[in-house]
Length: 304
Figure (cartoon, rainbow, N blue to C red):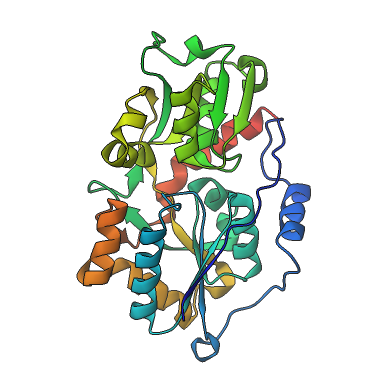
């Protein structure tokens, strides 16, 4: 039977601004357990497909998860395990090690490990394989731009999230500011939905959130998002992709997952899952979609 793998406990975050480095990645591997580097599995050996998820979408909805799992199990004609973790780092470690066949990750870790990851599919939302990062504040606040947020308590989603962290770091860097000195305090919620909740409740004065998640929440939880206001939208950037380890890219497993995703809208089960996600579908995509994220990563990293 297909099964859900429960999320593990989130590790505490580091307060200093930093990119992935070797020590941090090895720490993620250790936290993920004993990992074996796998060169790739034959399709006949794949008794169960392991598909990783991060808080890149509304992963707390159990009905949605069941719908996605059931579609993938039917399309792939074998059991599918949805492997969930609270942090991007944990899923990235599992993906790079070959312990996952594929994962729906974020553009930030994708560009950091572009040489070691292969793109399988990119979601299409409102006609484009793109999304934006939103900087949000309390609905009644009069702030006009990012510099008005100096001294705030700021909520991020995850230290390896593009929309929930990197975009704000890059925006401040473009203004000659460093987030450690700019914000009075910042913290990670490890969920885009929780960023919205933190700002709406007054726990944070501002927050960095996935624009797609904020827009979907506006449809299903308008009373919550209605207590926040979008202060700033980023440019359009590559939507969080589905990827696999480079060593698995040419396997039948990877090809089948890619085909299942890109034809999802043609199947009633798949269409139902897409409707719940508010997505048009999935497209093959191209690595160049993430060049804008790469530029932000390079800018922030250049500042140390």
